Amino acid sequence: MALLCGSLFRSSHFSLLSSHLIGNLRVCKRAVYPQSSWRTTISTSVRLRASLTGRTTSYQIYFKATAPLPCGPVLTPCGHCFHTSARLRALPAPLIWMIIKPLQKIMAIILGRSIRKWWVALPDNRRQLVRKYAWQKRWHLAGGAGVAIMIVALFLLTHLDESPLTGRTRLLVFSKENYMEMAALTSDAYMEEYAELLVPVTDPRHQVVEWVVQHLAQRNKDIPEVSDISWTVHVVQSPSVNAFVLPNGNVFMFTGMLEAIADVHQLTIILGHEMAHALLGHAAEQASVSHVLELLSVVLLIAIWAMCPHDSLSMLGHWVQGKLRELLFHRPFSRKLEAEADQVGLQLAAKACADVRAGPVFWQQMELRDQLSGEPTLPEWLSTHPSHRNRVAQLDRLIPEKTRFLVPPIVNCSIQHSSMYESVNSRAQSGESDA
Image 1 (tube, one colour):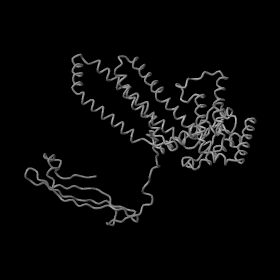
Image 2 (cartoon, one colour):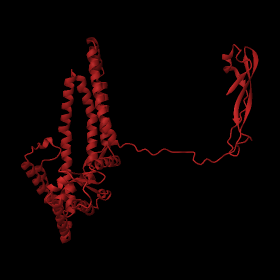
Image 3 (cartoon, one colour):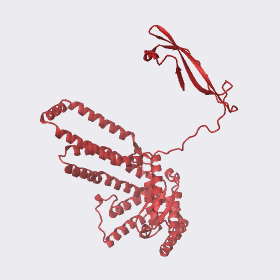
Image 4 (cartoon, rainbow, N blue to C red):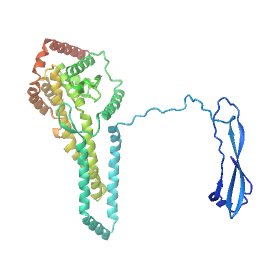
């Protein structure tokens, strides 16, 4: 707080004071003395001289401040001076993409619709000028489009990866670490959803699935992707004929699938197939391809909403574009990944000493089950999975190829593993009868 004394307020040239201020200022440093419990008020005088219209005027400025006595800096230790906030984890990239995905569609619709309204509002002469300008700059526009295509191609080439077990070249936009975080969130969501439907670990059905999963992991421990994952089994009481394995090793088996399986060999084939999805990183690959297709389709979506004369036609074009992308890209790609999982899963089951001939038999059973139930079956080109008949043909073709180099391990399975499978099979049948 400062008190200004003198004739400063009476001066008519107060506004010029700051530009002509010349003076000296004494500064007293402030320090903290823990041993001093009292303070005193001191005044610091500053004499300023200013040249105003040829004459010198003196002013006295008094500062009231509190300072401890005696004078002199003293450093004191401070116990807990710095505090840090809790560490915040960023959202996984796939989750961020899932959030942004609908927003980019909305922005594309708004932009395309705005371009159409702007074009409709233009008078005819302005439209002719725009067309003429675009024709004059056609080579510049073509060059810009070529640069954009090169950037996209470079992005795709720099994100190519090799599949760990098949050696197939694939596109991976999301890293394995990001998708592991996504898998952890997904696993927590499933655990919360199926909290009241989980079969106890003492149930024979859970013990059979647990044994088969651990046996598959043990017999395939030479594969780094298998040994790096901690496999956890969850059996869900549900009539759904389904099973899936998350990338972090969480196995979810539904009792409806266990009822559709005839023996432990078929169970080993099914679990090998689902574990192959996790080992090959199919979830991250499918999300990467979907992400790239969505970004590329934004340009087409803008063009649809800009060129269609009415909103109804734009919505129809938008719907057709989405269905074509689903039928021409997503579903065929999903069927390709399922076929690859069948191939690798058969190899995992063969190394686990399972009877690989049980695979085609299982899919024949599923085809017969669908026919007896009378439920309509979709054609393969409309489904995300190969048809049962095509799966049987593919497995019959793969069995000699995948077991050719596995004959010594299969022979070495001997009576010990056969008896183990038989004992587990009897436990599974007793567990189903108890259920």
